[in-house]
Figure (spheres, rainbow, N blue to C red):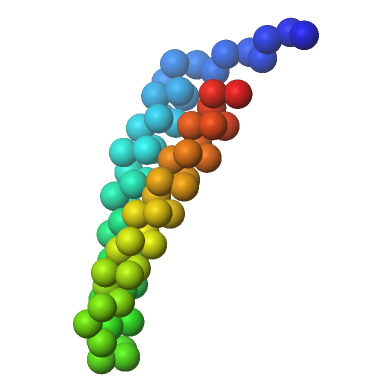
Length: 71
């Protein structure tokens, strides 16, 4: 079986640099959705719930990206 052609170095750097943006973006997005829902429903715990969901989503995307790049 022939090996797949290697991507250019700058393309690989761009792929892995997106990890540095993806994790904080998922976390911050989850937090702000929770804050918005807290204000909407007059609660005080949804920001923590959605912060945790954002962190989980970030790590799920990280695992998906790394497993796709390693195979």
